[in-house]
Image (tube, rainbow, N blue to C red; front, top):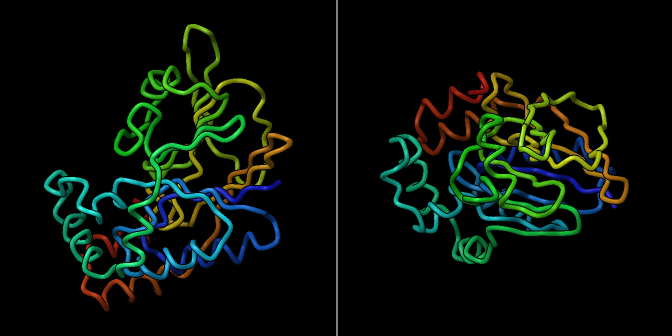
Length: 243
């Protein structure tokens, strides 16, 4: 079985649809690591498209914020404004779907969370030290995370917890080789690594082969949709810069 792994769509339907078109025929099932909504202009379209697919999906912090499960005073002003707009835009049916999302899922050799194993909704794993502190919080060889919007692999190299960072090599499958790893596929809808292209990944579930991928999408089209619903200009401009 081949798995399409996506995260942090953030209501960017143009990017999401481009990823699905690019990966067409190369996967059997979707794993979504959360933040389907937030920031972007198309929350209902993204939820409804995902619901059409064979999938499992986790809750992210922006999904929770849209459900009023997080205090948005902890968000920056632009993010808070986007959350309030998203709450008003979501249909009742799509809100109920978000409410039912789990925060952690374990399947075979893989643990799935949005943020981190020890804090599934909120913690950012942005460096090897934080990754090292998280390895005791899951039991499977590999944990897939999102949240940072940055594709990366953290590999535990010794029993003492030494952890190394591996940068993605796009379209080059790598073997998940028995070492313990924390793997981030990157963000579909709002990359933050100075590369504005949409990120996703493919996992060969049976062979343990993993592949980071990166593709261009029509950023200007998403930006226009954001302006049409009066979302903050800073959120609009960041898409073309990948931050």
